[in-house]
Structure formats: structure tokens, C-alpha cells
Length: 440
Image 1 (tube, one colour):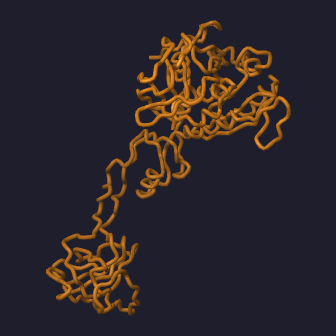
Image 2 (cartoon, rainbow, N blue to C red):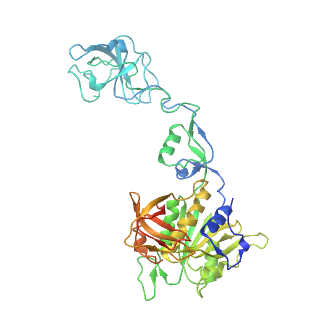
Image 3 (cartoon, helix red, strand yellow):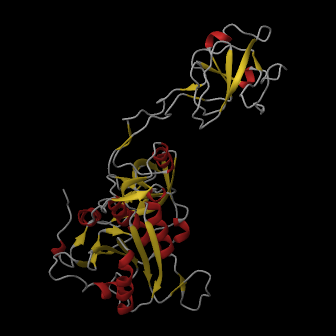
């Protein structure tokens, strides 16, 4: 049950982290399923169980290069007393017409080739002379055959039990078995299995398309020359990478200048390829906070709850946030703060779960653990705010990295966890157990 505050809570309502997240997850819905070819479905979530139509392997086949023989013909053999068997031909992988193996006979067989009728076991080539009359060999040797298929004689120096080196039909999966269940994320092993059972396409929820754009006339692109008062645009790169890491197809839009009309036009132009829009910067109440200016009045009067709601959250970093929908398809939009750490933390807490929800996943959150805080001094946190501090987690302990400043990007690059300090805690001493959110 959602604990989100109503959209009519008013501009002075101080939202909790949980209220804001619940509002997002109560609004965002999984994308509609579509049929995709296998490689296009990588990273997507299955929406139906997949049943095996044909057993794997579909026939008994050899796991070794060697000779297919009858067990009785090689029983009790040794290097002193080998069995001399007539080689009546070859069977290769993919061969349909198979030779019958009778008493005293052998068929040279390749790895993956079907076990011929009459054969009961496979003798690896290393246990034979390879058909050369020279004693045991260490590898398969090619040999030309006559048109009639006669290939001479092979000496077998070691016995093989029944069905030795034979991959049984259905030993991997059997026809009618469930190969994959609904809700499975398709990675390389799952794609491999689907191809192996003959599925060329599957029904999945597609990967969400996420458009990321940053705002600020002071932003320039990496590799460009910085002038006085300018900084490089790192947020759009960071959040685009975060979106891809979450499973989305992400599009980065270059920084938009501090002009409300330009920003509104840019966002509207991007809606054609967006299942979610994420902006960074311009959500406070300053004179140049254009995201708020551009989107505060956006919405459909006939659709309650549409438009973007800007709110204050009881958290640090990341107090100013915006959320709502925009455009004819009511595309969800998350407006995140502009400070690098604030935007990153906000993405992890709010945008990542939204993306995972669009994908159709049930577990949308990063894993959390209780671990021991190790630090030189006590951590302090503002009363009434849930603080998220960067930390380095290893072996059941977490060490803070960097300070509390929301501009400290270098420290963020060293962190693999967020240390959570609850709203009612103002100081945490070393040695105390704390909750951490594991990143990556």
C-alpha cells in the first residue's frame, strides 16, 4: 500500500524519501510486452514461461573424438592384448545417414556426432592406435576413406563401459520442461538456451528508453575549452551511464541553456523516443532555475495529477525534486537537482527504481546490508533529514569517503555504497552498525 503524500499536499509539505518514492512507483507502470528477436531481447524481461519444444541434446551423441563400438568387443582389453576392430566408416556432427555397428566393428565418430545404431559406447581416440597400427595415440588423425567407406582396422587398448562418453538424449533438458520462467532477465546464457531450443523470438517487456538532459548556461561539453565561469557537463554523462546500468536504452541530450522556452521545446521534441525523461539542474527556487519555470505549468487540465510537481524532500543531498508526467502519452519525468552528488544519489534512489519498474521487474531496489562503520570520528547528520553519505564497503565494514558536500565528484568515484543515516539520528560513532545501499 502506497504511503505517498497526495499531490495536493501543498508547496510547503516536506516529503519524506519514502513518500516521494512511493508516489513515483504508484504512477509508473511496466511497459507493454512486445515480440523481439533474440539479440534484440537481451536485457529484457520475459512475460511468459518458455517451454522446451525439443529435448537437448535431441539425440544420443558422442562427447569425444573416438570410435563407436559394442561394449563386448572391448571388454578386458589392455595394451598387451588390444582388440582389433574393423572400421566400417565415419560419422560426423550433423550426419543423418548412420552406419550400423555390428560385432567386431567400429565407426570413427566425431564430437557431437550421433551414436550409430548398434554402438553402445565410445572409446576415445587416445585409447587406440588411431587406426595406424602404432600403439595408443594422443589426438585424432584424419584419414581418407574409400568410396565404399572401408577405413581399415583400429586397435583398442582400454575397455569402455556402457554409454561411456555418450551424451544422452534429453540429459540437458527434456521436451515439455520449462526452460525459462516469466520474469527472467535475458542475459547471454538465457539467449543461448533459447537459441538451442529453437526459439528465434520471445515476448518480453522492452528495455525502457530514457532521455537524460542537463540544464545550465554555464555547462560546456568535455573536450571543449573552458572559459571564465564555465564548468564541464558531467551530470548528463553520469546519469546516462546510470540509466544504462539500470537496464535502459539511454539517450543523452547536450546541456540546455537557461531559457524556459528552449528547455520546454527540447523536452517536447524528445518525447517521441522517451519512456522516461530525467532532467538535472534547475529545480530549486532561484532566478535561473528554468526546469521549474518551464514545467510548473505543464499538464492536462482534464487529467488530474498530470504535470510536474516540484517538492522539497527531507533528505541530504537532494532536497529539491520534481516528478510528474508530460506530453500526450503522459510520459513520466523526474527532475533531479544539479549538484553532481545530489543528482547521482537522487537517480539511485528514485530514477533507477522507476526504470526497473518500467522493465517489469518486481525487485527494483539496490541491495541493502547492515555493516559496521569504520571512521576516524563520528558522522554528523542534520536532524530531520535522511542523509546519504558516500562510503567504501568491504568485508562487512564501510568507511566514509569524501565529505558531505554535494559537489565532491572525486570522492563519489571512490564509493561503492551509500551510508544511510536516518532522520532521527544526528551522530553515528565508529563501530556502530549502519545500513548501506550497495552500488554495483
